[in-house]
Structures are given as C-alpha cells and as structure tokens.
Length: 129
Figure: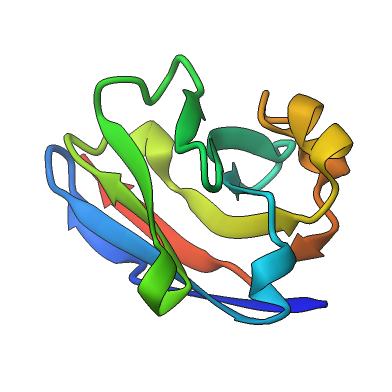
C-alpha cells in the first residue's frame, strides 16, 4: 500500500501560481505511475496530468497544457504540480493518485482516474477573477 497526502492548495487571483505537493509513504518503491486529478462542485472528476515514474513520460489535459507541469522528486517521494497562469475554471479539489500495476498504468497515464488504486484526500484550489 501507499499513503498519499496533498498540500499546497489555497486561494489565488487569476493569473497567479500555486505548487501542489503530494507526499507518498509506504510501499513507494512499487509505484509505477502517478497523477493529479481535480473535481469541481457539481462536476465529474477530470484528469489534469500524469507521469510514468522512472521513464518520466508525462501526459496533460488539453485545458492545462502550457500552464501546468507535473514532476517528481524520488529522494523525497513527492509528486508536484506547478500551476501557472491560473484561471477561475481551475477552481477544484485537486487529488493525487498512484498505481502499482504497469499494465494498468499504460492506460492510466491517459488520465483514466478509475485505473488508479491509491488516492489522497485532496487539497482545495480556488481561483478568483
């Protein structure tokens, strides 16, 4: 198992930046892929960005390409999401997720939330206009 704890959320004005962190503990060595997902009130959860650990390959939702960057720090067992030029439509609860199975990660990397087994509790991001 792996435990995930997000931090770094907050309230910013449009155009501002935030960096989210996701600290992983437990069997982190088994993690193959990780991702960031978000859910706004009244909307379905949507994928934001994913990363294949070790390979470093990344995948982004079209809505955040060029503005968000996903990265990892193996030494700290931490996943990051750098968010720049934030927009009001980025307002949501952001959660990180992890998956151990390589075959599931092949599809999970394409922002498929249902293929991730482990989830954090989330951190709220609010962007005002």
